[in-house]
Length: 400
Ligand SMILES: Cc1cc2nc3c(=O)[nH]c(=O)nc-3n(C[C@H](O)[C@H](O)[C@H](O)COP(=O)(O)OP(=O)(O)OC[C@H]3O[C@@H](n4cnc5c(N)ncnc54)[C@H](O)[C@@H]3O)c2cc1C
Image (cartoon, rainbow, N blue to C red):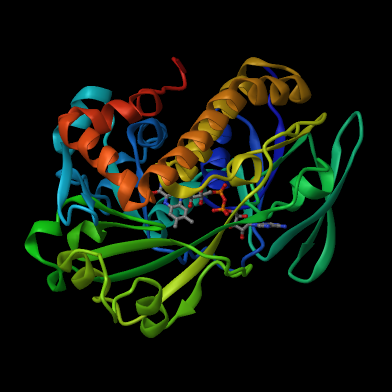
């Protein structure tokens, strides 16, 4: 199979994983990242076995094991009933069932591990302070127009992969794809030292479901820190990835100051951080082609999702593995990109839909939440994992 030179616009989780996967199959890769330094704000990310398996296959297990934690259980609480409605063991049982771990990890640690592997890979050139502007596709080669350290530069390659996130310029400029739009939901995020957290919550991933809002928390950084993500329905809009939010503002949203129906244990957790950062969640219409000739999209640029199935990063990582696989089997970049889109679209669309459906279930008004809570309670522990089984069991060599 002939080997190619690919340019990837965007050095996030998706772009760096794709660069590694492509380099490991013999292709040369240039990654253009607009940031001057690779730094992930944000806090934690959950990586289920479908995604962790790809990272393990790339040889990153030991490096990630240093930072990642496998939670003991996944626990669901309902603000309607005031307490726990379901608990599923994760610990060793997920790895036994799927052959790959369920990890929670700080994004900065994940990105640092990916960046170190990229730096050690001679076939990858990562250029920072390099912004993709446009490209001129031609039959023989594509010319990418970038701004590198403030200077315009043209780079030639056999193909361009837009891994430039939900507001992708590759999508809107080259694929005439839809612009990002706000979803009417804001995510508030914070981390606190774990010793401020009650013992019972230190080694589990837990959710608290409430009308029009929910809270997710889990341990991070080999158990030294505790990550909180609280999502609320509102119409705040901002392009910022991480806008500071005061405790007072947060308290108003989550009713911490007045009479609130959040259970006392959840209120105490929500009250822990001194400051939060907030992020207006975006998405876009799914109905467009990712690929045209030697240009395609990957990760959030192709299929941004609400984070309610915890799969946005996972899908980007899966995309990377599939792209490397199809490109390895084809001589022709456009044909490989088309095959990649055909392979990925149905699954990513179904996961995005599951996230929307999870969001509806999480935020049900109390009158309806009673049915959800009863179903969760009597579905016996296995039900939660069973709902995610079709997502978790994916492997690049056996997608279904
Ligand atoms: C609150 C919240 C919780 C989440 N939790 C989870 C979870 O638990 N599990 C999970 O799997 N996913 C989760 N996600 C989703 C996950 O964060 C994203 O899906 C993932 O980061 C997408 O990776 P990406 O590489 O496609 O895009 P991004 O991470 O957005 O990276 C895009 C990169 O492209 C760069 N870029 C942009 N424009 C240009 C340009 N013109 N030129 C050059 N570079 C450019 C950016 O600087 C950035 O580095 C969550 C998301 C949110 C909001």
